[in-house]
Amino acid sequence: MKLQNKKLTESEFLEQRKEVLKAWPTGNDPDLDLDKAVEYLKQVPEEKNFALVLNNAKLNNDTLIQPRGGVPVLSEHIKLLNYLSDSGADCLPSTIDSYTRHNRYQEAQKGLEESEQKHRALLNGFPAVNHGVKGCKEVFEAINKPVEARHGTPDARLLSEIIHAAGWTSNEGGGISYNIPYAKSVPLEVSIKNWQYVDRLVGYYEERGIKINREPFGPLTGTIVPPSISNTVMIIEALLAAEQGVKNITVGYGMGGNLIQDVAAVHSLYDQTLEYLDMFGYKDMEVSTVFHQWMGGFPSDEAEAMALISYSSSVAALSKATKLITKSPHESVGIPTMEANGLGVKASKFIVNMLKDQTISESDDLLLEMNQIKKEVKSLIDVVLKVGEGDLAVGTVRAFEQGLLDIPFAPSKYNAGKVFPARDNEGRIRILEFGNLAMNDEIKAFHYNKIKERADSEDREVSFQLTVDDIYSVSKGKLIGRPLRNSK
Image 1 (cartoon, rainbow, N blue to C red):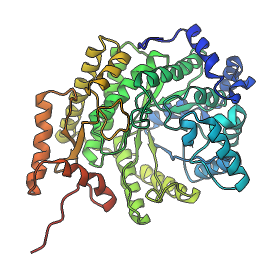
Image 2 (cartoon, rainbow, N blue to C red; image 1 turned 90 degrees about the vertical axis):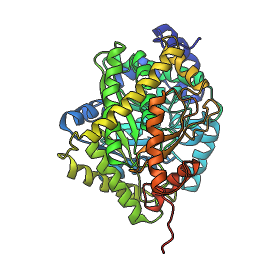
Image 3 (cartoon, rainbow, N blue to C red; image 1 turned 45 degrees about the vertical axis):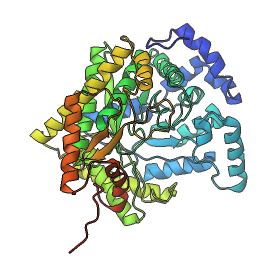
Image 4 (tube, rainbow, N blue to C red; image 1 turned 180 degrees about the horizontal axis):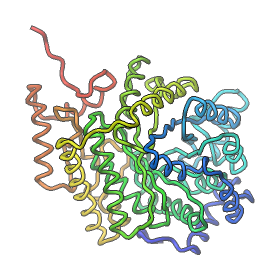
């Protein structure tokens, strides 16, 4: 089927579904009958429906707390989620293992069986496809909060079928954000088609009165990504999802580090997502935002890591993000213990509650930063529509092919990889090398002058070394990677 940004007809969706369910034996579960799934989802209580909980949080000006987390053995996964809930998490995750993310279900099955035999986790997440609807329902029924699948999957079609039929009412990802930053050799056209199916499944449920939340992955590579690039991807994925019938969407942003720029980015993302959805005729949309705590290198010292978590939480609360994805003080070591994960939740919850009623005033500085981000996002989306001759899906593929869209440090061979960021003198993320990124000379001059101002203050050249220094700086306790100066 030729790629286009057009809603799959019900017959096209159902025909493709026959093949999707054949990918692994759990796809034969009678509970995957769509009529049965609809009836089960209709019984989900409001407090466990992700979309409704997010809508309520927006009304109450709350920032919800959601950690990451997932282990392979069913009983241990349930234990983990209930521990995180008791620690203060408002929404619960199920982080999916790496084999499942790449549809390697046989290897996931082997890892699951060995984990059960050896009583320790030998997978880095929860193999939802292998557990099937039955296991995922056990998870859902054993917890008292809404649950979301979090993964990194270019082809999440069977995974999505299983989790939604099991009562999970949120699914993270998108055809760009779960391909370009995560996979090396998956064509963008293929992953966009796969996620059109995922979104059409949600649209199918929406047409039958069931609210399901979708959440594109905002941080992308998580390595000092310029806000305009990540915001553009979020808006494109929101539009692609809306075309397939998604009604409740959470657009994401990964912390950059500068307070004003981060707040400006979240506000701009929310404003422009609504603006573009309305412009393209998608009405009655429910849009929320999610802020991801620092996604780059973490300090190894636990006290310093907790300080970074607390700072991230402060920025999220002040940005008025609807949801906050937390980290743990074990971030620099690897997968955290249950207890360490709970500590990150508790600290984050405390901070967002403290700052709930405080705001960042709309200063000239904040408004200027918002205007700059919006100008850059418009520039990128305009060119996507131009090269796609009005079709957003086609334009996205062509824009990446030509480097007009380009995500820093992404592993995909379908990404040009010629854009490099660096911080300016205030720690705001700017673009050092544009490659073929679709921005005009005025925007390029703005970024160059900001970076040069910093380089001059440090008495060094504008070069890639700025980027290298900035990548490592936060883990060393500094936002900007300034060179050490010899004391005289």
